[in-house]
Image 1 (cartoon, helix red, strand yellow):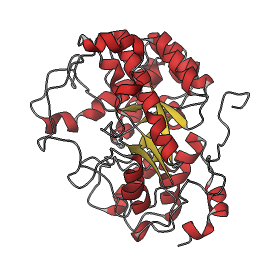
Image 2 (cartoon, one colour):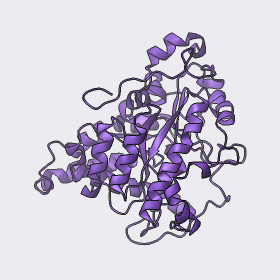
Image 3 (tube, helix red, strand yellow):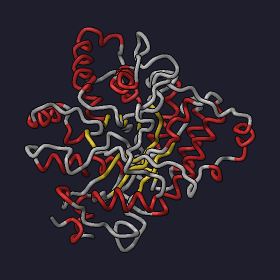
Image 4 (cartoon, rainbow, N blue to C red):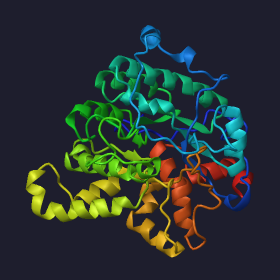
Length: 388
C-alpha cells in the first residue's frame, strides 16, 4: 500500500510465471491478446462447499432460517442463468475450460456474496458476506490468475468496514463488491463510512446485478411482467445509483474512490451524463459541493464492463459509442462466464475497432485499476505466451 492509499502493482505469487500453471497462449482470434476478465461467477459445490466457511456466530441463526432474503419473482425461462455447456464449480476445471481456452490472463471473481445486503437479518447478511470471502480463498489458492472480491453488507457499515480491513491485507482481493439492490441510493451518507474504508484500502467499489427490485420495483413507477423486461431494465438501477453518487458529492468527498458498474450495459451512461451536465447549468446551486461538471466525475471515477454489450448494426457505430464513453480509460472487458449471455473475446468486437482501443479494454484499463502487472511486465516475463 502506498502512503496515498492506493495499491502498488502486485506481482502474482508464483515466482516462475504469471500463474501456477503458466500463462498459456490463447486459441483463435484472441491469440496474442492479454485479457482481464472482470466478471467470472464461481459457485459453491460439493467439492468446494460454503458450509465450512460460515462464521460460528450465525450458524444457529441460519438453522432457524434467519438467512432469508426477498427475490424479484422473475426467473430466467431456461431455469438457470448458466450455459448448458459450462459451469463454474471447480477452480481447476474453470481454469482449464475458461482461462486456458480463451487465454484469460486474470479473472475477477464475482461471488454470490454480493447479495449479502438483501438478507433480511443484518447480522446474518454480514456473516454470509464473510463466509463467501473466506470461501474464495480456495479459488485464489488454486490458480494465480484468479483475483477475489470482498463482499460486504451495505446495511451494516461497521461490519462492512471490518470485513474490508480483514481481507484487504491479502493483495489477491482487488475490489469491494455489492449488488445493485440496496435500501437507499448509494450516494446516501449512511454509506460514506464504507467508502472511506474502501478508499483507504486503495480498492475500487464494484456493483453487480443481484435481485434488483426486491424492495420496491426495478422501475420507479411499477413492477414489470417478465424476466425479459426485468433484465432489459437493469440499467435504470445503475443510472439511479450513478446520479446519486455524483450529485450527492461522493466523488468530491472521496477523490480516490473508483466505482465499477458491472454487467449493466454501457451506453446508457452517455444520456445520463449529458442530462446531468445540462441540468448542472441551471441547478448547480442545489449541489454547491460539486466543483466540476458531473460528466467529469463520471469519466474520472466510474468504470463500465462490456458484458452485456449493446451492439448497433454497424461496427463503426459501436466504435463511435465507445469513444463517447471514453472507453480507452473507462471500459473493461467481461465475459460473464458461465452465464447464458456469455461474451466470447474472439467475437465481441468488430474488425474495424482499433487494436489500441481493444488492448485498453481487454487488459490495460483493468490492470491499472486493479494494480495488476502492466502489459509490458507480462510480455517481458512470458514472451512465448503472448506472441501472436
